[in-house]
Image 1: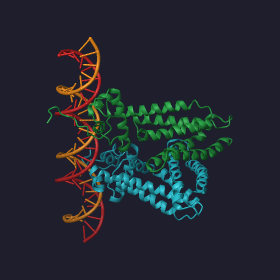
Image 2: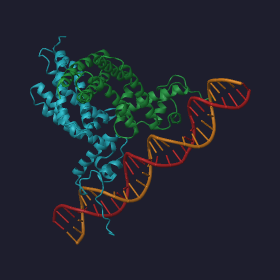
Image 3: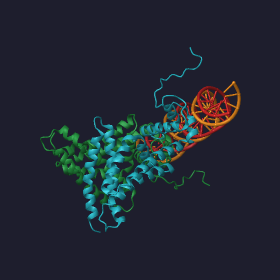
Image 4: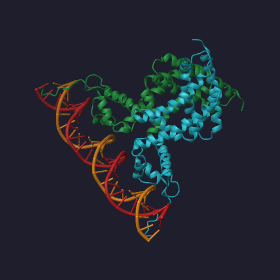
Length: 220
Length: 220
DNA sequence: CCTGTTTGTTACTTTCGAGTAAGTTACTAA
DNA sequence: TTAGTAACTTACTCGAAAGTAACAAACAGG
């Protein structure tokens, strides 16, 4: 009918509504869509055409904005990592260690809730080698380190910081693993509120503080 | 010099020493090598040629034994899953719930120690969809379920089993996640003994049993 | 309205990896 | 020794996905 090729609006994916977005908005959209697809199917199993199509755009756009597929991944990791580090920086202002631990755990659960996809991308990018893996490991290490430092502050003041950190290290990892697994469970289980997840997390944290304090109190 | 092409023995990878293995042995070797490579770089990032080369064999061998790349993956998952289920079946014979939980946790840590690669393959195969993901989720679900059932047995006898299971569910996931993360930490940290890992795991379990029992004891 | 810049597309090239057909070498047993 | 079979290779096809060059349409400001 129309000789002007009328674009139908019936396409499915994460379009921002209209077409022709300004660069910054398109970049943000591509990052979000890529995070979801990488999380769902893995980096290598997702093609650039797939990402482009899900954005309602064609491949050369992504290349013009991100350069390459690893470049897209790096941008994604950087974005997520930056936000994480910013959040952690805020936590550092809380003076009481125990309060800071709780706040950090809340922050983590919130992140897992709102940005599950990005977090999964980081987790799976960590495995293997290459610069992307290094980058991903760096961000997770920052999170672990923040937990570690704060837990170590629960030690009696006469205990060397280095020793305290060494002692709480397994607990920091276990705690983070528990938080991740718990969030995963809660995301995949219908009928569970976020409040319930946080309540359980609090109970688990309270419980784990007991052996942590005991280990820190032990001499030598 | 020699017109008989003399094969040098200087190749690197997981060869079983000589060449020309009987089918069963070659299959086992391929599965092991594939597990390590899939764990290190991911399923999609690993080519059949890579696996074949690491086995000191060529691609058509793998195809003749496993049919396709997904077929290889399925065989891998099946082998690991079977062994896991067999281990869990042994645990079921332990009458006391708390002892069974400890034994299951030990079993899990042992598995993670000896078969890190396979376990990582299961974890990463779970994401996404398709029959392979279903299969992987099934095996992990079996493990979770075993924990769940056993934890629920700690409930007072007048509490409905279904309610008890629902209540311990988040803890089962958190516990498994903590065990995984702790093992991961221990594998990647030099100078940490397995005994230390198990000691920490015991402490974490003891600590978490407190809120678990409390939640189970609460009425309604 | 026309001119440059930004946003976008079509239509390719090229590389890489899954899968296969047909042939070769070694072991085995009569 | 000689057939027969099990283990293994070489040398391909074919499709999919990374990356690119060249071109088209929209919007902005004069």
